[in-house]
Length: 251
Image 1 (cartoon, rainbow, N blue to C red):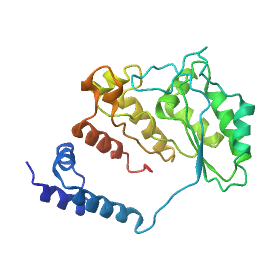
Image 2: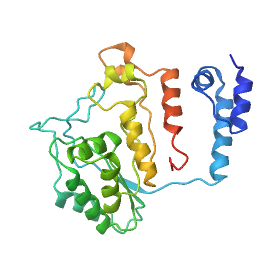
Image 3: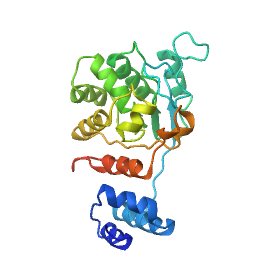
Image 4: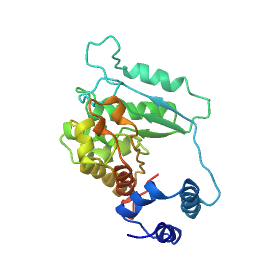
């Protein structure tokens, strides 16, 4: 097994580390070393520049066909706490942000059982017409997979339509944790790791940048204490998300 110093040297040389090396860094490396390595890797990409945006969220609905074990957001149809915004309401949310220097509109919500791809392309066009200078980062891979499959299109065809409507980027939600055993415990109905990665890889081929998120602490909200992520599963998630095609623009 490689020594921590050997693994750190690989990172400093900008060499890719494998799953076992990443897990060992996560478990054994001191925080100062992880910080040093992360800073060096960041500086290779963007130097001393730090980027931020001014964004706001539009969450069109909290109705969802899935029922993830950790989710307190989802509501079934007819629930008094369920919402399903009309297009007029979504336009009003966007208009309220006009003149406020918004650089990004983040659109995510539940996977609605009835809304199709045309509904979402129309939504993007309306938001873009009100905030033309803002980038639209919209819909998790899980939402995208459902709406595109419902339309009877390939992933690439569906993403192309959304891009033409004005979608500039895809957020990282729905990744949760790339460990199928854990996913079966916390979100068995949701798409697999392979499905999530397939959507993002298709986006990269079209020049659509994406990112990925990791879900922490799921075990506290699940029926089994064995459902939580581990250093190994978290490092696997991070590594899987960075194994994008060279043409990818992962952010």
